[in-house]
Length: 239
Image 1 (cartoon, rainbow, N blue to C red):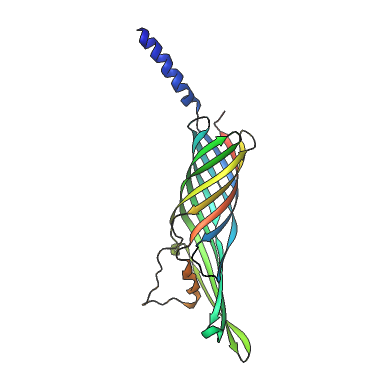
Image 2 (cartoon, rainbow, N blue to C red):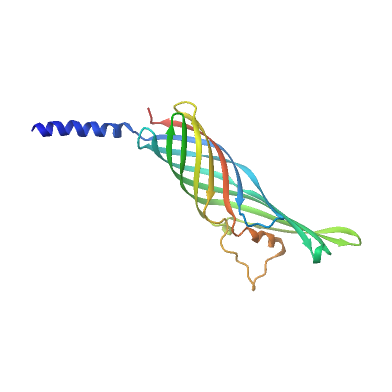
């Protein structure tokens, strides 16, 4: 009887810190600069980032005074500008070309992060899964052909829709942040994809690549990447 009277208070004392770690809920928003990552592009190809918004909600479960598990549901507007140029004919005897693409991709993203706090500073990292809800890519190629000593250009245009991209994307996210108040914080996060933006090319020997798509297929290994600045506000939970 004496042993039971000691065990019960000990169990209650051990469970008290767990009961005190109530889930926290909040919202966040910010801006991102996204681009394609592909280290194997030729030298005459350039990828520039495009800005976009990021916004959503998060749910945080503290595991200890310093460590928490945080799941988020975010909307992210990504995209990039892809440019290339080259010669037409042998050493440019016919002229040259300029190719440009502009994409806008709309994702719902679910990061699951481990968050570690050091005073007012915190670090976070973990995997994330993204789903492409809508997307569009506009392609344009100008062929500048020499005619009687002057250049004339021929315009080739094409476009891609959501179905041309890979719908599901596996990736990761990592970042650092600062708590400005107990409820308000700011953070800098990098998010990258582990899967390619496009599925395997559909063109082959029996289906030649149209002129407007020729340089485009150097992007077959391209992956999404984004740098984000976020502001987060806790609505419920916490001390």
